[in-house]
Length: 238
Image (cartoon, rainbow, N blue to C red; front, side, top):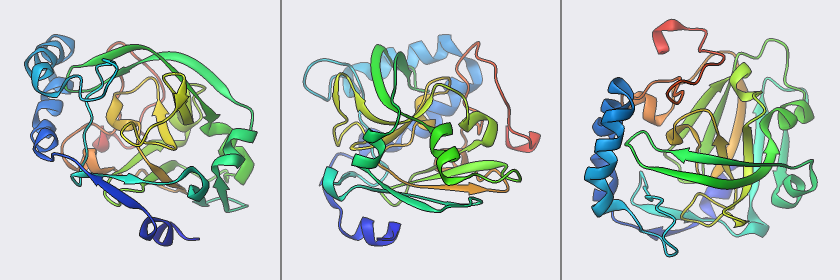
């Protein structure tokens, strides 16, 4: 099944798009001016966007399209292709059978809100890249979503960081649709927009391809405050 065919089989849940569309400029402001502005944005937005999920975990749930793609765990497919020796399609069972990494990390949104001590579980992205034989000339990794709109990218060095995972559990349970399940990307050292939801495809490529949020003004390198690490090889994209 190709990524397009998989998306054709996905149903959707509609959500309020107005909660989402006004955040692009606010997120860019938060990146530009740092933690103090982000905290004020979170305080201002919290009453309207906070607590949208039961349980009070304080995640704010956004959607580009105004709906959530619903993928049955048994129908989930992750297509990995590009500059690899062995293009492969993985099922959820395949991912769960691989060596797992569990970490407890915060989720930090660029607009200011933060959820501490979230337990994440999944497969290191570096392990998947090794499984498919990422080639030595690979420069970056691009990601696609089952929503058909969101995209993301990391340099190959960023993708191989030990706290970058293809996650299938969070909050001590399978990842829900609202949180981007059944499988999403989790990039611990970067802002939440880098952690693509409803992950459908991974492509190993020869140049950084700015994702949806980067095309709308967010930095390609979305490092959290005080975080250092591999940077984008093209300074014009930072």
